[in-house]
Image 1 (cartoon, rainbow, N blue to C red):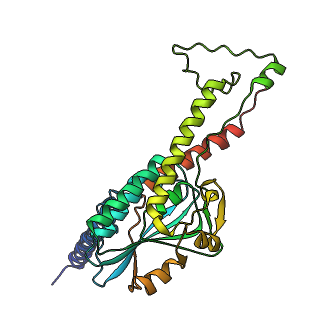
Image 2: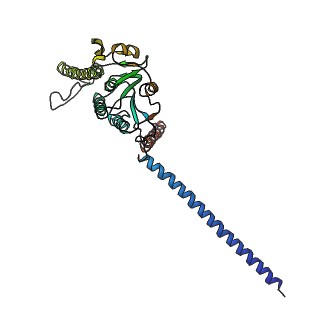
Image 3: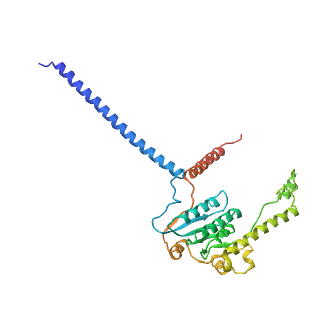
Length: 316
C-alpha cells in the first residue's frame, strides 16, 4: 500500500519537473525570438550602411525599357553646391553610358554662379556629345536660366523653354562695398600692411585705387568675351545679330526664342514624349548619400541646440 506522504511527494516532484521544463522551453523560445529580431535588426542596419556608403545607387540603374535620361541642375552653380561640375558631370556620364538611354535632358533652374564650374560642365557636355553622337542632349529651362546657367545650356543640341521663363544675363559682375566714409565718421583708422603693392587689391576699408579698378574691369571684360564666344559657338546661326543680347539683360522665354537664345517652347515631359520619343524618364541626377544627409541634419540639429542654449545665457 502506497503511503499518502510518498504519493504527495511524488506529485510535487512531477509538478516541479513540469515547471522546470516549461521554464526551459520558454527560455529557449525567448532566445530564438531574440536571435531572430537581433538578426533582423542587424540586416536592416547593414542595408542602411550599404545605402549610406553609396554601394546601392540609382545613378547607374539600367532600365529594361528604352527611356529618356534626365539630370537636374538647380540653384547656384558652385564647387560646394549640389549643382557643382563634379555632381552634374557624373550624372551626365551615367546617363549617356546607359545602354537604354535614347536621349538626355538637362533640366535647368539656376540663376548662375561660378564661370569656372559652368565652363567645366559645358566642356563635359561637348565631350559626351562627341563620344555618343547618336544620343541627343536637350536643355529644358524651368523658371530661370541666367548667367552661368545659360553658359551651360548653350552646349545642348537644343534649348526648350517656357514662355514665362527668365533667360539671358550674359554678363559678368564683381561687387562689394566701401566703408571709408563710415570709418571716418566713427573715427576709425585703417592700418593695412602689405608686401606687394597690389596685395590689398580692392580692399573695402581703403580708398578706391583707380589702377586696381581698371585692372579689375579688364578681367571682367576678358571673362565676358569668353562668355560671348561660348554662346556664339553654341548657338551658331540661330543667334540674332543684336548687341543687346550680350548686355547682361534678361528676357522672357518667348522673347528668347525670337532672339535665337532658345529654340522652342516645351517641358521635360514634352521633350521626352514628342522629341526623343521615349516617354519613360529615368533620373540620373547625382544625389547626396544617406551619410551626407544624416551628417547635415545632425550638424543642423547640433547648431540649433547650441543656439537655443545660447539664447538662455545672460550676463548679469
